[in-house]
Length: 184
Image (tube, rainbow, N blue to C red; front, side, top):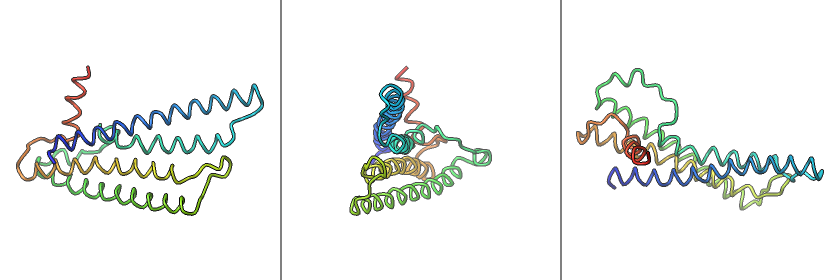
């Protein structure tokens, strides 16, 4: 797959997951406000609101991870690596991105396996009796989406090491900047 097509796929997937994450945050706000109003006015709080806020928060964070990583929104310390030649930087980046992608893929896979065991055993939340497996499955999907970002960067690093590109910017950063400029 061509680098820009892979970056476009990662962009689209991370953008959609980020929209769902935003809906989760809005859901938390609506739920908290509804719970306060119902408790104060009608003396009838929302049953299981504490659990639902926890689930929605976990979903919001996990589904937003890929977009944050795609946009380089995380903290990076590159004091030493920025002083290395481009090919050596790319080689180190390949190693880091392979390990990172494998880690997130393994975490997503194991969480998916765990979600299936929750479904099979019928585990539900203690107060609202909400099934837990959909939450675990969506968190696994968020981690799987996050796994795509270092994969795309690893492929770009490979291209740099093999002599095809002199860029020091990862593929996601080089793809996002023209999109940002076009949106202005």
